Image (cartoon, rainbow, N blue to C red; front, side, top):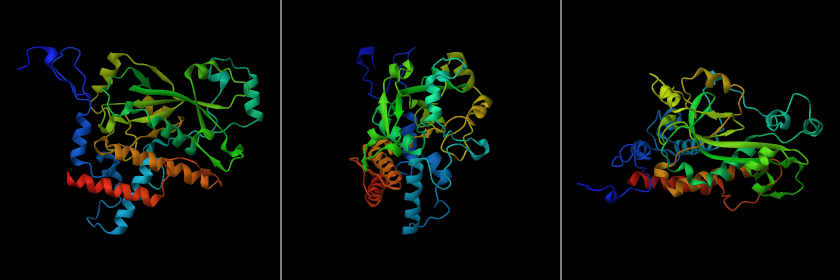
Length: 338
C-alpha cells in the first residue's frame, strides 16, 4: 500500500485529482476503450459504424476495401459524398464570404471605415476548403490534442468547451499568385494574436482566428475535437458546465454526422450561420503512423485542389494516393495483430 503521495508514480498522460491526490484520472480512459472495438485505423468506432460503406457485407473483396479507403480519405478531409459535418436536419450553411471585418469585428462603429471600403473595392480571399485544410495541417503539429483532462472553461454558442489551441492566420489569395509551384506559406500565413487584435494592417486582407476545441473527454463521441473559425467564445462558469452535463440526454449520440450535436437550442440556431468547423479524426491508439497518415491525406487533398487550378503544391509530405493507401492497409493489418 502506498504510504506517501511522493511514492505515487503518475503516468505522463494522467493528472492527479484536485481533492484526492491518490486518485489519478486517466485522460486516455475513453480513448483506450475505443481501441478495443475500433476497426478503422483513422476513424473512431462511433463515426465509422454509422458511415462504413461495407458494413452490410462481410466480404473482403478489393471493391469493398477500395470503398473503405475512399470513405476514410473523405472522413479525414471532411468532404465527399455522404460526408456531413452537421446532421442534414440542422440546415447549417457554410460561410464562404470574407471573415475579416475590421470595423465590426474590432470594436468599430457602424460607419464604414477605410478598410471596409478597400474590402468592397478589392474582394478578399474567402475561407474555403483549401484554406481550412491548410490551417488544419498547420495546427496538427501541436500535440495538445493527444492527451488532455477535459475541463470546460469557455462556451461556444452556450455549449461548454475547452480551448486546446488558439491561433490566427492571414488568408492569402492564391488566385493572385504568379508562381506555378507554391507551399503552404503561399496560402496561409500565421500572425500573432497581438497583431490580429490590433487591426494595424496597411492593406487589410482576410484574417481568421482559429480555436481548437474539445467538448468532452478525449475518446468520447461527444468530444468533437474540431477547429472553429472566427467563432465567438465566451467565458463559462463551473456551475453552468455542471448543469449542462447533468441533462438527461446532453448529446445526440445517434447523429450520423462528423460532429455530434448537443441538446442545446442556442447551439442549434447559431450553427446555421456559423462557418462550418473542421472535425478531426481519431487514429487508433494515437499511433504516430496514424497521425502521419492523416497529415499525408490532408497534404494530398491540398495538392489535388491546387492541381485543379494548374498549381503544383511543394510539400515534403505529398505522397501519391497509392502510397497513402498502402500505409492505410499496413496500419490496419497491424491493428488486427492485437
